Amino acid sequence: MSAGIEPLKTSIRIWWKDKNGQRDRETMYDTPPTEANLKKAAAIAQSIDTQIEMGTFDRDQTFPHSPKRKASYFGHYLNQWQTTEQSLVSESSWITYQSKVNNHISTYWTHKQIAKITVEDVEDWVYKDLIKQKQLSSNTIKEILGLWRKIYGYWSRHQSQVNDPTQYIKLNFNDPDDIYPFNKSEIRLIIDNEQDQARKNLWTVMIWSGLSSHELLALAVADLDLDNGHAHIRRGVVKGAYRVTKNRRRKRQVELLPIVIDALRSQIELVKDSPLQTVMITERDHRTARPHNLQFLWHNPNTGTHHTYEQLRHQWADYLESIEVDYRPLNNGRHTYASQVLSTGVVTAEWLANQLGHSNTDMIHKHYGKFIPQDSGHIIKLLNHALDL
Image 1 (cartoon, one colour):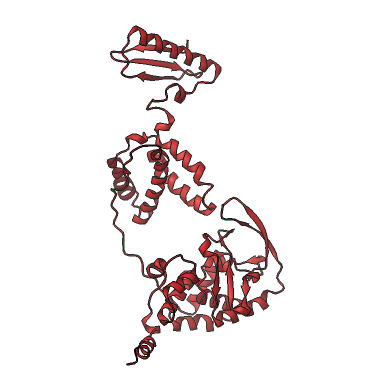
Image 2 (tube, helix red, strand yellow):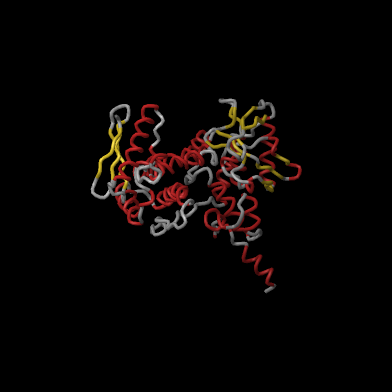
């Protein structure tokens, strides 16, 4: 017999041994050891014994209200989240999420009973583990808490009343770093001192188009309608993986300045003999991938394809150092475009948001646009004229 019962004072314990001889047990609480209850418990033990012999024993089915069942633990819902979430986000996002969950959530929460998690449990985790011990930044903790809530949500959606224990967490955030756009004199140095025509074209487009570096690198000749002054943004490339724009708003038509149109015409002439490349581009469902034949603009003759982000980053850093211009990351070209455009006083933030592919102007004011005083002296003249003073 590999299962049996043990009468206790106010309850009955059912025990069993699996095929490896490992002993386990469940207690039937509020079940006094009366003759009827002992008979019922013995029948359950007999059923477990038979199921173990047949290899069909399922603890959760036999004891659906047990605090030991898999669905009682945070780890059960973590597995549910993994199964679902992986199909909803891009591969690069999934890698980031999984890293945060594995390093900061899984080891701490997997074996905790989810219904018993309290505000104090979460506070201990955040303030003692994430902040004091691991010394994570508030922004990183905010991202981790967002993932924790999603996992917790797979349990809470089945509960009639839930008090989210993370809502009481308070984090102090540093002021965001000021963006550091290039001013006009720096831009002239960057463009005028570049001796390589392809790179000169690239720097010009990078600074004066408003494209992100991932959009810029994936730009192809077929995306351009230069006679009408447009570029069509249809895709991006991140860590070598091509995908359609990250949201529908980012799939857009960009109006190009004449200086950018000239640079693109020059670049088309330089790459006109480069071969088409077949690349697989992942659609917005993150599963479907379709082949596209493209002639990339920023062709790297050493590799036969376009420059990668890392290749370009090294070239950019070396070049800025050689002309003694303070280093800014590649995507600073996008910040510079936004700041320079706003500093003219000619366009609205709404127009600029559309150019950059944002659904509203929040990102413009918070992250991209910074008024550049030394490049905006003309605005008071425009204002004086408009006011007719």
